[in-house]
Length: 383
Ligand code: SF4
Image (tube, protein in one colour):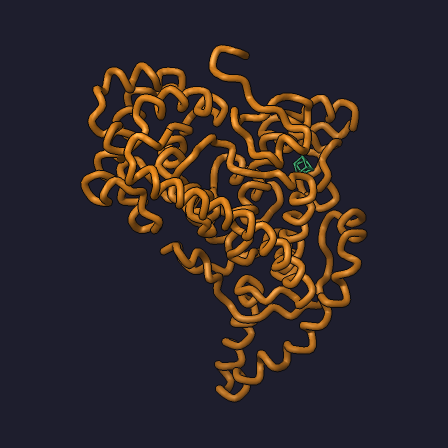
């Protein structure tokens, strides 16, 4: 796949190698970054929000006072460093976060450097302070990183074009179904040029198992044409270009940017939306606002892996209808504990994919997944 067009094949292969390397490096960097953030009191923009309010108040009194405001908060910076070592034990004990001594600073979420999404300083729900929310959110992500060290995008792909098409096809169906369908599609149409010039009825036949196959055929052929006509047959690596492609929204664009280009992005899919609201990270319902609100809680470098952790958890344990609370490793940190089955034995039976001993969604999962005992998904018609 991807080798029928010598030039494109070389380029895409390079891109994928690059992207994979970046992901691996990104993982390490993210882990290091997380610790550093915890130890230093997390210097991200997220925590800076309330300080701006404080500064603003003071500014109303006098400019000089406003300037002093950040200085006043400096001592409080030390508090998280003290708390950091205790974080794990604390995480297991107390579900709802309590008072936090960290003084939040500056406002604004540098939300989505790549994103035109609005700058937000979301109000933490339920009386939790902004700082406590940031710390709890990051603690949840750290815990999930331990539970799913092999988290990855669950669409099979070998280059940015395949990931783009697979992501568009994943609307209204499972990644498993897409993964079972795309091998035939990419074998027949390995490049945007091939797919743009295809006979629609033949593409429809291949895509039938994914549902909405006529609309999806239109989308993938349309975006292939746009890639050929406007981007020389290459998938662009910029958000503003990607969202111009027919059928490509921010969610799809961030999946491609995060996983094929190594650019941080938050993927707000149905699982992500459900879980961040259960965790009271935000009360927003609009995906763009959720993206901005959650992005403001984390360093940008964490965004891609955060998305995978959350989505993995939503698919395996924290299901829409029957969350397996009794088997959930982050129950002590979750305000929605008890929304699902709390009996440990009954909860265990609700676990899905590798957590429940079943195959995953990818026919070709990463080695780390296989090493952790995960099983590849069966091809179409095999199960
Ligand atoms: S405790 Fe229940 S609701 Fe909370 S994350 Fe776990 S499974 Fe989901």
